[in-house]
Length: 607
Image 1 (cartoon, rainbow, N blue to C red):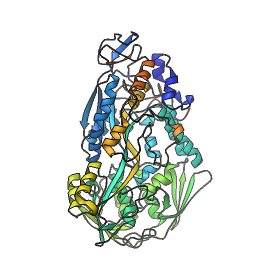
Image 2: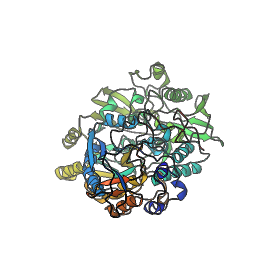
Image 3: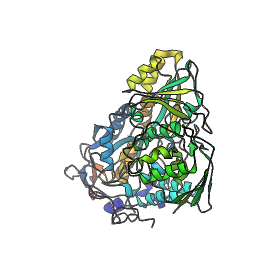
């Protein structure tokens, strides 16, 4: 039984199961509920139709959203008004807080409790096609004041499954554990999906024969196959825009953004394996990868390939790359430290990875994330990884850097020593200050393609350019979500999160934000329908099946759990609701309340 259920006494679970689509009752057990002081000091009178005793008035709900990240900020703003309309019918008032990206993230990761809900979205670089990153970020050990859990969500049943999927004895077992973790979280209504992410790219058919879009769409810095399989027709150069962050440093592992590290790892460098445009995993610099029966030894055989200066890519370079990245996981924000026992060079083209425990994300995530580094160049960074910068740039990828102007542009030319990708054109990546400048450059024929444009920009380009522009639309494996900041009231209560997820008009948001493109999301899941690791529908349930929302059902759910409304239709807590936080602000959850954690808040293993 959850902690909040203990706080209030018996909860009628029939309605909970009905609203969540009949997910197994065993999953109702969890260790993430409880309460925080979220009242506004109001009196605790009655006011419901049956004059039941009620608690404090539910305070104004604060929502932070990223206000300074271009198209995504616009999409958030366009949807929040519609969300507000539905939620206020529950007798709740909202305070929408524009917040810069860095501040909001800091508020979440320090458990600052500046808001009850945070509006987030996740890009979908190739590494996130493995489930580990977006599943592991919600584990209980990452919640609290010095964590990295964007919702500060803590549930031991979820956490146990999320850790276990890394050590699964087979891919089948791993998939079942991922399904179990995400099914538990969905029943807990751990996040509230608002609308999908739809990649819309535009290109000039007269300038480029577009290719390599597949299931990933025209989003070249997430899907590098657009660069590999598109061909400029009016020149020898494919011209597009780039995030200025990509050109700030050549020490790309220091970037906080996986969409910045991805082009360096897949264009200028190459990985051992790589997801193609249809999300299929392909060998790249690895000719083969053999895994022992116990999953502890992985033997990588390399293809014949060269770095941009002509040096052969050897097992020594592979060993150096993964030891260097792992040793500097505290400096490189998107790096992890897999449980390597050793990385040994067998011969010039064979390297053996021995693990102290099974680590299933190693191939898709780690091998697929990091391009192989030129050891003789990067060895100068050992002991100084965060400050290192290099020139010339010697990569292992299908493109080599011909010229780079920090913060301005990078010109790439083909590398004929790549074993897989045979490209015959140059690429010019140009940085722009804002989206308006990108669109203007495209309209002026200074760019051949642009990506991540919003519906209004698509309409503008269609109206002004006519047949000289074409578009590629594709739903992404991730979406836009509201993340409850779980330790505090009222969002710590499961039925409150469920009611929020039931109440708003998804169809209206979908039509306004995406003009109907993509699919409406009804389940509490970080993966959308296009993600290869999304659980089956019967493992997730739904907030509602009504695209226009179900305010009546949401109010009924709250009422059945002891909530009510005063004479002014203001929502009030149950009379016996414990509003104390799940853990004190400034601290971390510990084993005292979460048995999967030790006294310091570290994961203590399954129970």
